[in-house]
Image (tube, rainbow, N blue to C red; front, side, top):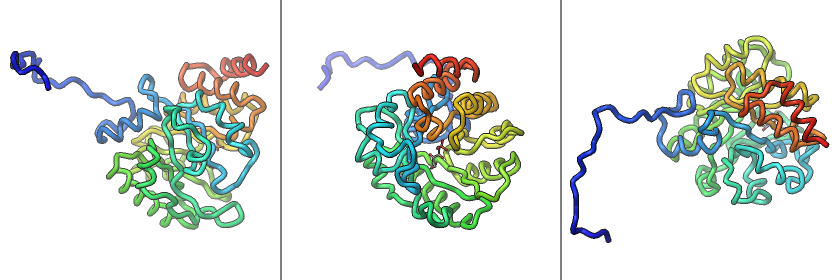
Length: 290
Ligand code: R5P
């Protein structure tokens, strides 16, 4: 117990103005402390950006190329990521609890590549998410898809549970194969999920009008990497997305299916955190590839 002999009344209370408590993420300054603390384990507070390493693909694709052995392909990359997007199975079996990385847990699932992908259910309880110290929960939303209302219900249920526990929810806007991927669609999909309570949103980059998608969405947007393309092209997409208002990338195949995944991740970090152009980042990739 503290010494009680010299209890001094405080006198230095400053003025009436509170110290500014600005938060580094758009639309989220009013969230509770735990929510903001978790978001700060995903988005670097120094620049409000994130490089999420996504390797949750096995939840519907099984051991896809590059993810045959998470211990061999992903584990060495963990130190370079800001956050890890994965399933609870991958987390418990293969990821070290000592990495200090924010974990964005895949929270929906059900159908495999062999059936209708939009027919998902919530696939984790909030208790287990707390037990796993999740920094966020990710749920797929199929706006305009066959199971639109069901997937929106998954989102809103998870938002209710997440808000109660201070766990952010990432809405992943999934696009059906036959749907048009344009700015109008992505404005619709991202805005709907944000209005319904998503804490941040994942979507795809598009060439025309992506800045209207980020500006019409009141919470941060991260882009999915998408299918594997040439490194130069993937870095160009990341660069443009950041220039046009994205708060980061959630990249999977373009990292773990690269011939040089660590070099690619370093180059992506250069674009997202260090202001490198796509060309400069590609030069970095090449220099790390030998
Ligand atoms: C889909 O399986 C997941 O949501 C992925 O985490 C997401 O699509 C990002 O991975 P990729 O960069 O491979 O598209």
